[in-house]
Image (cartoon, rainbow, N blue to C red):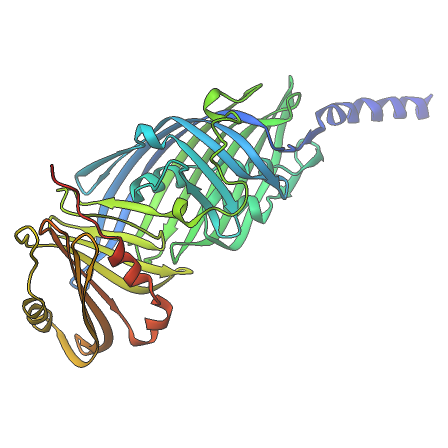
Length: 437
């Protein structure tokens, strides 16, 4: 009797744990469709250096994204290529009292998201995005990571697991992962739903800067549908100064909701997605576009160039190569000439030689060219010293047939000339001027 009673007691004791065991796994496949709502609330500060002293600039931002997503390719247990159609993609930020708003234009609502070893790569099949539009669709929480947050097997309440490195990099939006310290835990399972948490720290690189994140997240898993249906993701974000952005300390909360779709909406059907490349993305689809706010010039450019500053007269871009800063470009709307004319080459050369802090030691190129259609280009490349540091600069003046002009200056260290290659020429050649009616 005692042995039977003991056995009965043991069965009763372990029964609740047996019932609490769930298979916490997703198996993404091509054709899967979901609708997502992703809301972001962010506060913190940018840390900039002014005249040798650090200064904090308050920052607050909100964003909302509502979109349908169709998985096109799945690898490593995660979606690797997805098509998204945005009903809403909008963000607003206040930085030091200055407010800015961003939204996707109606002709760029279809976006393709690629997940690879270098992070998330987004493009529009309809044509080039602006840098702000690219940030808007790339920097929100990426749901391609959701299946990787799970253990991928049966677990009991209280069990823990290490989040996969691929999922950590994708969720944290790193270009490269340095340290993965995210741990998942099943905290509850009842009534067809399981609750899990993700906690820990992760370190990575984004745009050439080291980023350390402290994560606390809670997710809901539908045991019948075998999919994550909701996630609240909170992170504390400590970013070092990088080549294209200042240091920052931020706190962000993301609230994600997910609904399965039995079939893709018309915006993501086979006919609509026919223009989407199935293999390597053509270079023309990876380009970004920039238009001067006053309509004086415009150009398309490779996304290795990052806009880091803009005033009424100047646009500043920095070129990164695998996260390393290798060159800076400054675009200036030059004074307009009469139709069919341009600033004389000698006058532009004189302005170049009088550049503050620049001393020429050797001229490498001095050429003037005229292209069909009346486009004129004058280019000077020289070695010298900029503020007593060895450097190479190229000065380019571009003129259109109606007298519109833009000057584009590139500055780089002498040991970075080879890395820049022809990318400075490509940027200059892309400058165009709007046609006047």
